[in-house]
Length: 306
Image (cartoon, one colour):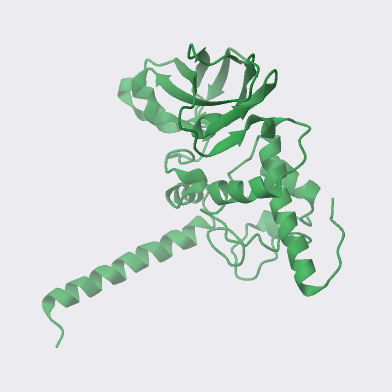
């Protein structure tokens, strides 16, 4: 016999299942919900780097200025390429920092950061940053490192932040004493060949919250994206723009799509860009590598599509 407590639990499960189903349905059509849901499910590993409460760029403009310093025992020169930028709230911005190893041996450094005024830290969202890992730099080499960020439009609704017109993002590089997750800053060299292994890590960090390789998730599956017509996965609620885009996914088109989806297919519902070129190239190389692995497994031939 079902007890009253069991009935209450059952009703709770049904309600929660209905909420999840509604979110999954709406997410296919709504840019704000798409962003919020992908953030909550792990886009780039955090819940505060891509979510905004409006899904639109605010007319409010703030100045973001940059400050850098280096610990005394680290023989690096480290400075922002640009001292400040003007950004609209909600506008994604890509900026660069320069690091040079003036020593005679390879050195692993680790950057820490802070945002001032402190009350703005909640609204300053980094999509990509060199501060998430230990970084190796060869002697005499210079690396130009990207930071991809936006300032959450929710800032405009905070009465305590109405007086904020300037935000400072500060970085300090230290020598890593116990290196972990070491990466080479040479990965940001614009002449570096695409790296599918790094692309696999980037896909897991930046794409897997919304996309699986072999099934429809929040977005369509991407494991077989190469040579596929845009908007053609059965059962996925594409926007009309993407359904009728007449685009085939090649290396060039995937790069254009990640750079600016709206420029390639106007009025589509994809809200996320990948502004940093090496990151795009590595993710695309990973997807292309999957195609090559599939061809080898099935014995089918296929030259890379560019």
